[in-house]
Length: 92
Image (cartoon, rainbow, N blue to C red; front, side, top):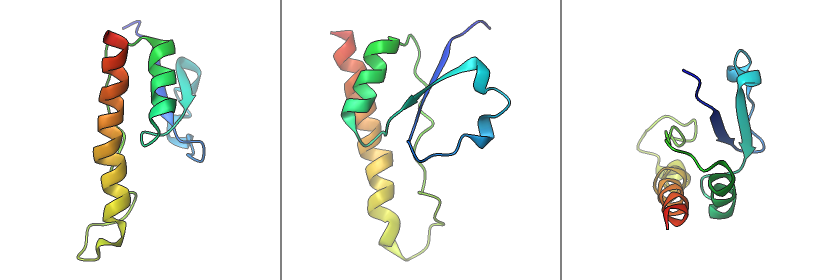
């Protein structure tokens, strides 16, 4: 479709799933839980559309053991709020 695609990935994250398309996307190193890295990427990219696919359960199955719940909430809830904040700051 001719779109320019940028992604935000954690520094320690493996991109093996993207091997087939790596040459057609722009990768930014950052973390949804770190507002400064998101703001930097949003400011430089100036996206017209944002698709948020980050988050998840930190690779852990949901059980009655809540030991991973805090980390999951951090990336899912606070990460989403950070992304919204970074985008809204660029709209002003």
